[in-house]
Length: 188
Image 1: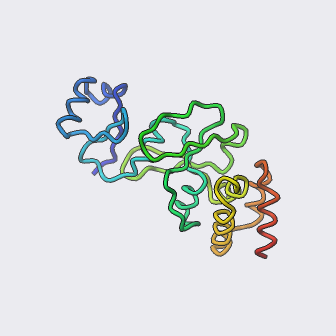
Image 2: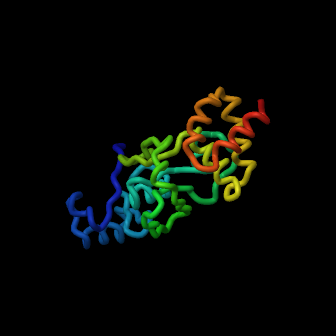
Image 3: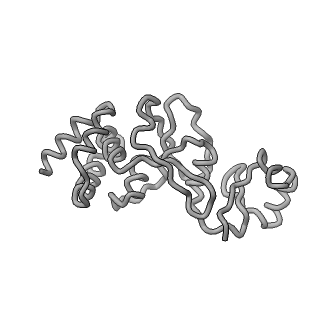
């Protein structure tokens, strides 16, 4: 099946539907409401609705912290909500899904950020690289816990992660360099 686009009341016309046609299709079960104002065709392949909602609400939404570490298979922790970074000072979207919005400094927002496809859709979402995610876990260890940072670092090193690359990123982020360096030295 082809990748599906999300539909919103404001974009329904592009898909050949009036707003009332969009709501009628949802009532009749041809469209599935995945979040307030966001619909997918009912026969769309399974996809991560929280990813879709985050990417639809904010084009700069970026999976971060524990959610990025879990995606990169660097932690066994299963986040209760999708951790999503947006630039500090942006309006935090109202969301119906399990999304934890985090505001990251605009000056460092794009460091280690890449775009990945959302499976089953024609959308993409930002995600922080393993190195950025580890550096952020050390930087925000008071919020996410020191164990998350340490365990992710150990797994990343076990898989051949390059300490110089981690330190290059950690050096660009406030409060990340020193704890990351101390942890690397302790594990060496």
